[in-house]
Length: 204
Image (cartoon, rainbow, N blue to C red; front, top):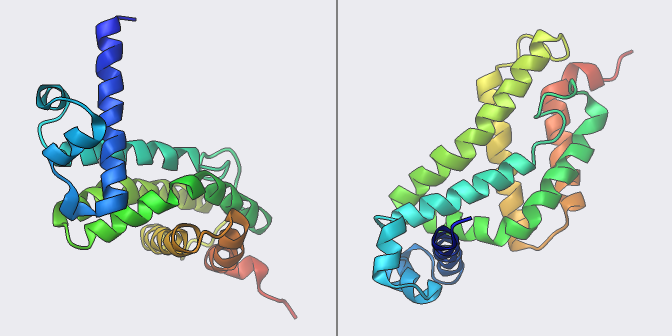
């Protein structure tokens, strides 16, 4: 690799790391190019070679988090298995395990987004919507396979379950420092009821 390119990549990552740290410590109010430069230890020229604005650095941070979200995709979301009630809780433990180290940063982003419309829109559009889309696709795939009832609305269901997961990640993993298993114990019955109510209801 080109040493100059390597240096540029390192500076870009340092800027994104600095953006994350500032969001954690100061929220959106403390986020500007000057603060990011100081935290990252880069010059103004180096910053503007890689980003046009502080918001662009935030978008790069969100794209990094989106990559983490992709890593939470279990076999069901990845399309390797058809969903069934017994895999819901293990899948959610997997999700919680991948997200737990990043949960404090997610909390900081969501808190900052409460007062920053641009950040709120970027978070929803780049991270949350991607998760909704992945979940909706999995629901539609299972409906086509006959594993889920046809009356389930894929878009609305995916939207509700994703926002519920976001809230539980923030509360259990981010604010309380809970475990992935605790997150899964709370979320799994809700996912199971919504997706498999017909299959798990008592028959008599």
